Structure formats: C-alpha cells, structure tokens
Image 1 (cartoon, rainbow, N blue to C red):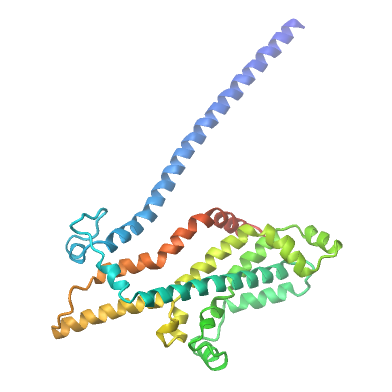
Image 2 (cartoon, rainbow, N blue to C red):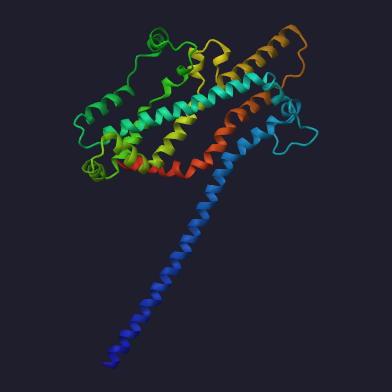
Length: 318
C-alpha cells in the first residue's frame, strides 16, 4: 500500500510539474502575442496619426516652404506662418455663424435621429409585433432602389419647402436604414422577458422603451451618436442643394466656398497679371481641414469605448 501510495504521489508530482510547465509555456505565448499585437496596433495608430499631424504642421507653415520643400514633421520659427488661418478667418463672423449652424444641426439632427432609429429598431425587434418582417423588408427595399436625384429635389423644394430653411439640413439625414438595422440587431439581443415583465408591472410600450430599452442600449446609442454626428458635421451636399444664401450655409460648405474663391482669385491673377498678394492656397486647404475636423477629433476619445462595444454587439447579435 505504501508503495502504491508513493507511486501515486510521484505521479501527482509529475502531473503538477507538467501543469506548471504548461502554464509557463502559455504565459510566454501570451506575452509574445501581446508584444506583437501592441506593436502592430501602435504602428497602425502612427499610420493614422502622422497624416493628421502633418496637416496641422503644414497649416502653420509658410506657403513657399511647402511648395519648395514639401511637408515637414517640424516647423522652424523662420518657416512658421499663420497666413492660412488669417485668410480662413478673414471674415470671422461668417465662420462663426457657420459653426453655430453646424453645431445646431448636428445636435438637433443627432438627437432626432437617435430617437427615430432606436424607436423603429425597438418596434421591429419586438417578437410580438406580427408585421415586423414585412416592414423590415420595406426598409431594406429602399436601400436597393430610389427615385433618383431629380424627383428627390423636386419633392424637397416644391412640396416640402426646403429652400433656404434650416430644417433642410436636418430632415434628410434624420433616418438611416443601416443604423436602424444595427439598432434592431442590438435591441433584439435584449431578453424579451424583460419587456414581458414590464408589461406585467403595468408599463406601456413607451414606458418600456424609455425605462428598460434605452438604459440597456447605451453602447448602441453612443455608437449611433458618433455615426450620425459625423454625418451631420461633414455634410455639405444638402447645403449645396437647398441653401442659396450664405446666411444658412454650414461650416463645410462655407469653408469650401472660401477655398473655391481663393482658387478662382489665384487663376484670375495668373491670367490677367493682377497683383493679389501671396495667397496661401496649399496652407489654406490644410487649415480648413483642421478647422472642420478638430471638434470631432476631440469628441471621439470620450465615445471610443462605447463605439467599439456597441459596434461589435450590434454586428453579432440578431
């Protein structure tokens, strides 16, 4: 018995040694994987950050330096110039008004879009809604076929009165079928028993939506907020279609017109020999990029964790 017992003890010790060696081996593999992963992510991050850094540096570099020497990682005191920003803000009230319009449109449009998208996704994700498949197909069908630009423009201008109205910048982007599909998939992953429990407690559909669905869909809301806010912030197409006066131009379209005016003035000067001074056309493009993307770049870090979580959950569930 003692011999058997000692043999068993030796076997147990051997198994413990093998287990410990396996753990050590796995630990080394994980460390190597982490090093490789972090290195690749760091390189990818640099590939994304460096171009924007070059844009910022180029926007404060003298125009002649950019033309003769190209873009630099560092700008010296001799080559430093704020002429591009000075030209962009030549009429500061115009840019400030455009900023105000863009901020208002982005905030109001994003709030309305999130409300409509999540409400629609919630309804179509309800298992007790008998027509959800038919209505879902109706939404999906609109992504494949549309009436075209001319009927769309006539509808918006002649019948809906979009011309020179601020809501013309909000309504066209207020609903996205793609965002609705993401919302439907995410909300469909919330246990339906929670909805039934709310009904048993006497809650109505809107109460269930506000008290149960929305609090559990915070990652989804943050993700859609970033998507929609970016779309509204970068929109210039609707402004071009419906806004004929500069008083209602948003930031993107205002900056585009400033750049077009600069390019036109430069061409006229080249053809006629007229002296218009030194125009920082290249620096102006970079400065406008910084002016337009700066607020969104500052906002993204606060939504990043919700963005990743909401995007992956919305893509997998359903």
